[in-house]
Length: 320
Image 1 (cartoon, rainbow, N blue to C red):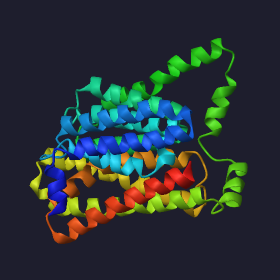
Image 2: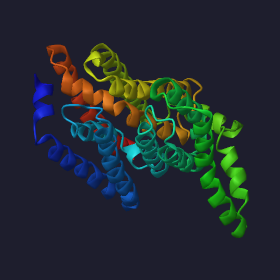
Image 3: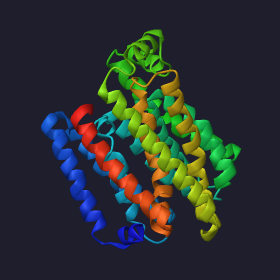
């Protein structure tokens, strides 16, 4: 089937890298200030490859996760150019990579501290990320089987470390008002909500974002359902790691849907939630492409690829 040919092709990664360069070239032509987002995109591409390799999440074609990541990310140029969202994704990928090293290792405080340290950095960049911390604790206990009181202490130490460095700097620079601004960013105020209601549906950018979110939801549902069906082929270790990612993906997707129902789709946090969702669904999406062999899955893969290209073109034309 076509998806198997794509998965086994050595040209898949070079082609997708050239494709991403073309997308970034078009974005830079519209605004040169997007250059710093390119660096974060390249870093995240390396991180998701390392994340997959360290944990053997895709047992046959471990580099193909890069192709899937590029296809999903480039479908939303508005996300690519959001530096804060890309930074949050960087922190999530590093945190997951480090945290997965603690599988059934209750005494591994080094990796656990590092995981929550980067999660704390992500929280400093985007305060609502703090709501994901309980999910990580539950995931540790249920799927990594490494949570304990001592582990909780290490996680809290990691979360607080960025504050211990940032707070003295702000005090020295006499900019403690930034702490107040940071806390206000955690929950949208009345003005933000009113602005969201007044602007919703008034721009083609909103339509592009909505189409992209539906695209993400379809990938999430298809890849998760298929992985659960085929998960018996994986080792228990790998299966638990995938279930951890699915456990994170479901409430993330629900929060994304809630933002459109409120509606808060014009707030800055939307891209951060999407970035997290892309990071956690990419491994399962890669499994779907590389392990399925039916005609239906082949047609689905082609359709999703075509939609990704259409969304990329639409995002560049109307979204930026």
